[in-house]
Amino acid sequence: MHDVVRDFAIYIASKEKHGFMVRAGHNLNEWPRRESFSQKSAISLMSNDIHVLPRDVHCPNLQILLLGENEGLEQIPENFFIQMKMLQVLDLSERVGVHSLKPRYGLVPNATRKIPRPLRFPSSVKVLTSLRTLRLDRCKLGDVSSLGRLRSLEILSLSGSSIRELPNEFRDLVNLRLLDLSFCGYLQKIPENLISHLVQLEELYMGGSFQLWKLADGSVEGSGQACLSELMSLPHLNILCVEVSTLLAFPENFYLPSIHKFEITIKVTGFGRTPYYHASSAPDLREIKTGIPNGMKHMLQFTEELTMFCACKEILKSIFDVKGGLYHLKALEITASEDITYLVDEVLHSDASVILGALEKLHLRNLKKLCTLSIRSIKAGSFQNLQILKVDICHNLSILLGTELLQRLSSIEEVDVYLCNI
Image (cartoon, rainbow, N blue to C red; front, side, top):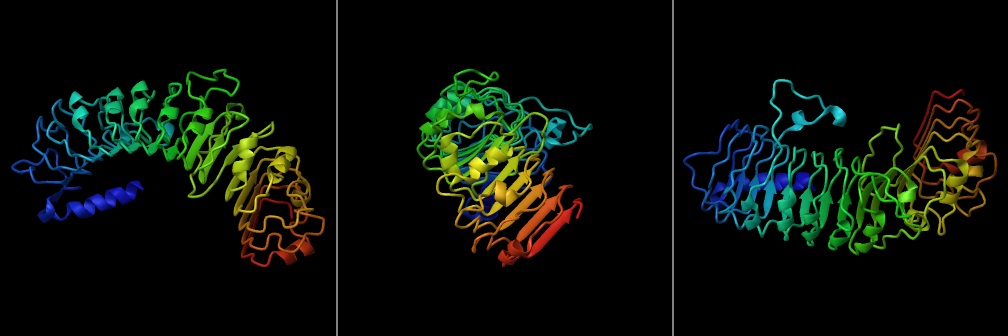
């Protein structure tokens, strides 16, 4: 979505005769002089090296302002927004640039650059009553409580920023439809009942970010106060990417009736893989030792992609035995399970009428006891759409595919076996 917004804005900004101006990537180190902005409705000054913004700019018709990727920009003058009351889209992403972020994101700081001060919004931000979209991706942020005044805001992206706490004032963003907090590695606190106030929220992205959810029994795992049950108060939520450190954070009745795309990562300390967000329902379940909540079982019925990590055989069986079956599942990855010998027979229920008939990709990794996929007969239609089969680091594997199972793989295109003793 972000790329679409950016590309569209740059396109319209190139048509200056319509009141659009673009100076993106022109190596500017200051705001353009000797220009009249009174008739401009869109301005793009992205990817420059602008350090200072003018104190007062007369832009009464401005609707789009793109200032992203100006790494030297350290502050916004107090009255900068005063004459931009029509502004609807504001992009300040990478204002501090990726070089200012610490290596926890896998980025190497540039030693030649001065680390900027945190961005603080001036009081004039309150005049932006028409603002619909605000991007602050990968920004070093200070106090952002004043953004709570932007009650018309529908899209707020803080992805990869240094924000440490969501301010209570964000409760007033009642028209927010998309909130992106992904990869906010410093985020430690979300006030209780803040999320439940965002009643128009449709998309919430929090992967690689906040994990300190209040546990379902009311106890607090960390300094954060938000609880996952608040998500159940969002009637329009249909896309969710969230990360927790324990299944105890989920209430037993956890259920999101409008959800159709989701990724839930149960991430345990010591496993550092950052989840990748697919454009489909894709829960990533890690090191599950107890049963999953009933509400999540219902969500699994509509899952298209499923990743299991360090799950024991009994938990895997309970997942694949959900009411209605996993008939929508297209991609399955099972990693680091220690007690599976025959995958289909012990986990996927060979007595089912059809086993994973929609599955297109199966990836098994580091299953220490796996001998073969199945030693029993398999009903027609099972695995009929499987195209890719990958098996890695399964040292006990003796036979990958029996004759009967091989005959069922009518759509198979690729079989990849790596570091297995066969």
